[in-house]
Each structure stands twice: as C-alpha cells, then as structure tokens.
Length: 410
Ligand code: PMP
Image 1 (tube, rainbow, N blue to C red):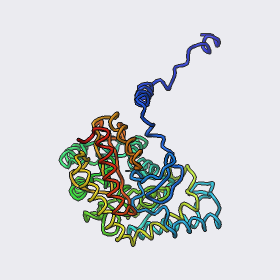
Image 2 (cartoon, rainbow, N blue to C red):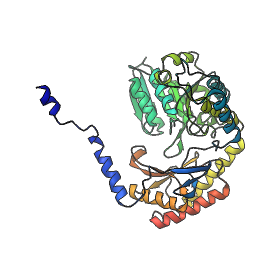
Image 3 (cartoon, rainbow, N blue to C red):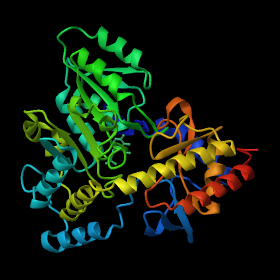
Image 4 (tube, protein in one colour):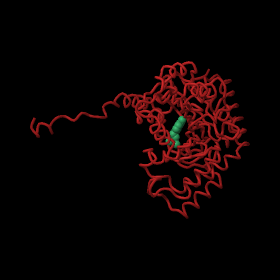
C-alpha cells in the first residue's frame, strides 16, 4: 500500500461504540425532561441547601453525610493553609509534594482509626486503584462482591490478578469461590461496608471470619460509612466488632469528611513500603495544603461526632419509614445507612420523578445502569446530619407530591 492510499483510508470512529448510549440519552431528552446529569448548583448555601435553576433547593443527593463542608473550624483551617503554604504542592508525595499538612492528615487518620499506618491519596478512587493493584498482582486471586465500586474493579484490572466475583452479600457464594482457589495462591477478599447504590450494609463479621479461615487478606472500602457508622464512626467493620481483622481499610475525604482525597489505613508492619511502589500514589500530584488541612480538621472533629451520628440515624429511619408508608419501593428492607434508595419502574419514570422533585425544590441522585445493580433505575437519597427534622418532613411531602404527579405512587 502506498502512503497516499494509507492516508486515504477511512478512519474507524473510535467513539462509535457509544452510539447506543448517545441514542438513549437523546431519546430521554426528546421527552422534554431536563438533563439529570448536568445540574448546576449556582450557589451553595449550606450542607443541605443550594440554589439550582434560580431556586432554593434542599440537597438530598450529596455524600455530605456529616455536614462538614461549612464547619467554621474546617473552613478556617483551609484558609490558614492557603495563606501559609500556597495553593498547591505541584508535586508527588515521594518528591516535593509532602508538606507538614499531609503528615498531620495521616496522623489524624491514625488517631481516628487507632491504626499504625495511614497513606493519603489524591482521591478515594486512586486509593482503591493503588492499593488493590499494588498488593494483588499476576497469579493472585481477588474475591469480591459483584456490586463493588468501579474503582475496586479498575484496581483489580490494573494489578492483573484473577478476579472472582460472587453474588451481592451472599456469604455462601463467597465461601464457595474461596474454597476453589488453588492452595498456596495469594488471596485478597474485597468488601464494602455500605453499598452505595442500595444503601445496604455487608455482613462483614461472617464474611471476614470466612476469609480469614481460608487464609485470605481482607480489604474493606468504608467510603460511605466513615464518620457515621460504628461507635467511633470507623465504619461497618467497627460496628460489627471485626475491625481488628481487617488488613486494609480504604476511605475517602469526599463524603463525611467534606472535601476531596482518599486514604488507606492499616496495621500491617510492612505497610510503609507501599509509598514507594504504589503507582497511583507516586505518579500524581499530592493534595493541595488547604485540602489536607480541611481534611485533618474535619477528621478530628468527627471523632467527637456522636450527637450528629445519632441525629443522622433518626433522619435515616424517619425517611425510610415515611417513603415506605407512601408506597415507594426501597432498596433495603430496613434503614441501614445514610442512603435510602427509591426504586423506579424504569429510566423514563425515574427521570420524570427526578424532575418533578426538582420542581418541588428537592435534589436527589438519579442513578441508572451500569452504575446500578440488576439494571435498576434508582432515585438515591443521601441524608445529612444537618438536615433538620422539619426538613425531613418537607422532603416526605415533596416525594408524595412528585410521586402522585408522575404516577409512581397511587
Ligand atoms: N469507593 C466507593 C465505595 C465509592 O462510592 C467512591 C465514590 N463514590 C469511591 C470509592 C471513590 O471516592 P472518591 O470520590 O474519593 O474518588
């Protein structure tokens, strides 16, 4: 083939694989519904209120579980760090990107979890990507819940271990998978405390017991439970009395902590070597000083958050019971976390309900496949410790109005 012939060949459109998704999106927008994935918050007034489309809206679709984003001490710490250390580190943690604030943030995490080691990443996504891919490689096996977060799957793929998924929260299925792994192979069981789509929790006590009996190491992602679940807010593993048996806890600053960043805490004696070999830790810039300062301050305040935790449980129980009484189908039988998922009949009804709620002045999350399990369309409600009891009452009225207007409830 000549050079001219080669350059004249039609280019294969690498974006053609997204045509079905483009068509689905266009069909949805053609029904006249607003795009649920491009909402702009024009102004944020508090952890629970923002101006959206020019109107004050109650926020029920953020992960701001403990309402720390507007805490006075947190904001003051961020401002101080900005003044004293500048706007960014411009470097990796292993070269020029470890400031005093990163150390203080890791110290706060060690104190919060009462663990020996803490490693801060630039996001929770990178924490899963980095830790999983670094500890489980070719020839090792990762046994994980099929509903695991994308960052867990991506970490598994990056490390090139054998991935062995089991049915969501199915203890027997997990045990069967573990029993089939060749003797002597490296094994990692990966679980989440709270599964964020349906808001249900894992039976960690049983699962971790089985994992240990099969000689597996255990990693638990406590992204959605930190600060809220457990007597000290350490998560579901703490609540079920098995935190000492967890080898690695992964978490994020983007939810209860109220900023951005991710981490891993562990008591493993060789943990510190990971700082040199974990690529998503080494080959990226560290968090800005203002971010680690806000995170450290928030984490230390969360150690004394028992009143907030109690109020958040009240909110969760009340919303769950109220929605159930109105006739909505929910993702979990009982309230198990700060997330209450409302199952919609299909994407069209879900989008219509989402828009009707927004018109009422309520923002929730519309979630759909592939993020959701079993092809479900969900309206995910995540409560905040700063929602007042009165607001929860208003939220229920808004759901009743929107549900009746869209025919989702009778
Ligand atoms: N793990 C789980 C279970 C999550 O839900 C998320 C984010 N939603 C992450 C990890 C990633 O956290 P981050 O936002 O800090 O990247």
